[in-house]
Image (tube, rainbow over all chains, first blue to last red; front, side, top):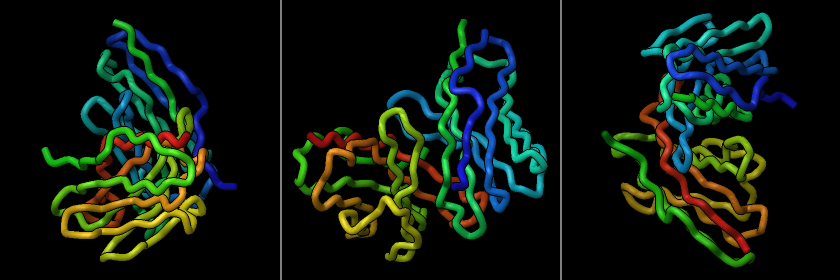
Length: 113
Length: 115
């Protein structure tokens, strides 16, 4: 069936490096994408979102890129800090069901001081 | 900063028992959701709720599950007769709007352990 998935389950970087977390989606009808951060013992925390009519969106230290041609989503974190260590999930949704998110498997990001 | 709060943080129950998980959404939010996350797996949508009725539900949300907004502040998830496979972290979420850009705010979750 349709699903959202991640290429890499773990990512380790040094503090100060840039991080790139990738996500593939298979549902071409998806029109809204969100990145969430989940720290241990906590719920998912919204990072950034992007609609399908855009290919790039920037926030504070984070950038989301959307490539609809290959159904690929990425999250770039600039100057990664130890506090960025967490599990990162991409999520997608369709049409009027914006609260009904389909989450990807998650990538564990570890930032070494 | 307003937040979604959930109780209990952890509940252990015997198979077949009823469980009620409670959530207090952010006060001016109108859309409410339950998600679950089985250990080591991805977060899964269970149900969305708006205007005192279910908007959508997933195939996981069978007749053993129900939701209720008993008063102006609480939003509950009831599992009528728990099964071992119901063991998971259950997250409540709320949003002010139901459209794109209506950011979902998640609570810290209630861990359910069914023995």
